[in-house]
Image (cartoon, rainbow, N blue to C red):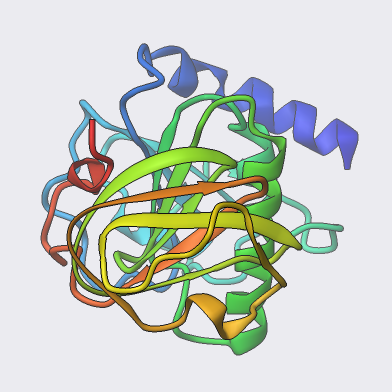
Length: 228
């Protein structure tokens, strides 16, 4: 797998070379996205993962093993059908530390096992990231690397983790925690909170926020959620 990953990094290098600012998001488009995002253009860094290549319109880079794409659409880099990691997992490994913000579209809602393992790949990606990094998955789950965050939330949200973690929640929310409250993996301690403004969250390991209605489904990015 090491050789395959190095080959992928080399193939991706022209695309990532044009991504001149780590502050700009990188978009990953997956096979479950129904409608081609109209807001994406050649000015964005876009990687189409396997069947996501059906949304490729003359720009971006497409990689995958071809098991979710038809013969009409072509991949720029083809993975072997038998490999140790998923298409998404390999792409995430190849673009680690290339940006601080990632938007994933079309990676959930079909097979439950794929959904679960995608969560694991994203969290491992954040665990290894050198930057303070955020990942938005299909417009309603935000994954955040360890550290302190200020996030604008309007409405219902839940906070959870896939790791044994210490999380602090404060700010303009209904339920707050003590500093460095212990959160066990997928424990319901952070379930169903409510906010109207800026919330402050800090953690010692990657964590996620489920956002009920805080992300406009047609929004161009989720950067407004990360308070500056």
